[in-house]
Image (tube, rainbow, N blue to C red; front, side, top):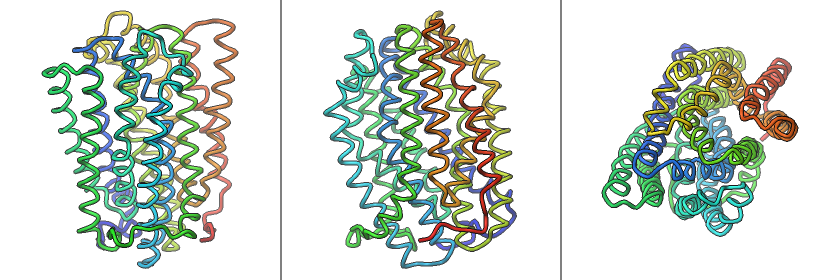
Length: 447
């Protein structure tokens, strides 16, 4: 695995970052496509109530999964630094400790999700007409959650050592399997929402198996050996110190979205379906955001490990600008075609109207979350994972929740709810920009 294409410490910065980010972008694209296929199948073959059920379950699922995904991002920073510093022994220890944590954390999270799903869905104010389908989807999804966690673990390890191609291959495979199983389970077998959930779990399990097979046979310096799969407690502490803030950031964002979802639920099933469908479309605008945010975290991690501080700084500027421009262009493309895109999901006219309203308010401002996520990635790469966590806690959670509590009490208008997003995006982008301008690039967090 040690080759020039995997090292982000050499070569032209723009070309190196784009070469690394492109497979991430394509992988996220395929993931978004199979998420969209889920909604297309549900909307066209089951109905709006089922579509609302899948949409309302998504935020809660990410609240739990997002924490572990964030920990893997933090682990990736540690792995990237050891890889950039060419420290093979510490790299081996960090990889195996990360894999052990994935097995333990994924199993615990799966059990918690299955047991507490009825309580969670009721706390979210899920309407009674939607609750049975939501509960079915939720329990099946969390029953197979370990495969989702292991898949994200494999991705994190491979991307940390500069390999963004193999995660792309696994995502393409997973997407094709998911689409095929969706059609079989829902259209042929008529399993309803349960079929969608089962298809997702099986496709993720297949990708996780392929990923771990690759790491165990062809992982190079990041090779996983089952005999070495045990935790190194000092290393685990280091990974958690870096990863827990990133995980909490994901959970904070998801919790805030859950609060927003609970307010959307108060407008009825049509609003739920409209917002859920728009979020599927919105996910395409987030593709460059997540791709460049992860790319710059890995890029900075490797270059800081190699003591190439100026290269890390110049890479950060490029990723920030490229991510913001691409995200806004995609968001505007969705905005100008929102009505036919919504109708493709088999949405009823009232459902389409909710999606159109949300896109008009949110789409012009997608450069703001792009800036926020990329700057958060920059700070994580520098070892400052707590800073973006605190900014997101204040701006995307406390202020967003507070705004909704006041605004909707004054006027129960869903357009005020949609406006919560650009308002809090702007606050987080401004705050993180100040943090990035003040941070020192010649100092690394101590091991």
